[in-house]
Length: 226
Image (cartoon, rainbow, N blue to C red; front, top):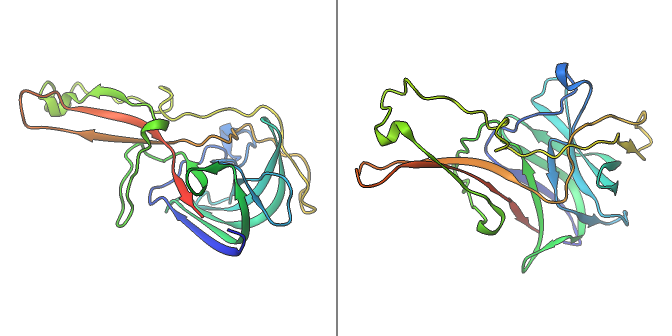
């Protein structure tokens, strides 16, 4: 806080790119990640983190934007860092954060991204921490582990997107930019929200006949202390 610092946020899991501007997305670009609000030196408005994928859809750039309204983002600064969608990493250039909207005993910035897979892996030194006050759990019977369908022949795969297990809030308006290098308004059709959610999925199984194994899907927030 109150000093220029570089930040690296490692999720250790690949990010889903929804708004990449290709094909069915009809030119909608960016805003695949979202964050809670914070303030930095030199800008009086509350700002948020956004991303803009490169053409290869493997990496992208980070920008800062403000909200004129819940559906009207305005880009304030570009090239604030880089994002690696494959590795699930966000690196911010030196930035002076002076305050945050979220405070739970310490100043926090919550950053979330949609995982490429609902099977979230605790890679190497990554630990998955679930916030019980900001999550919803839906229990689903694991038919394979329970023995009712050992071979998996009758198992039906359910999409995490059509069942709204991965939640996305549409943004209706076009975005504008105050950056002098911005060529004009950009249609994004994505979602921008102060609230943050990260969706994950986990499964558990047991060899005891007296218990029903189940898998669960949960939503949680990822918090980073500054």
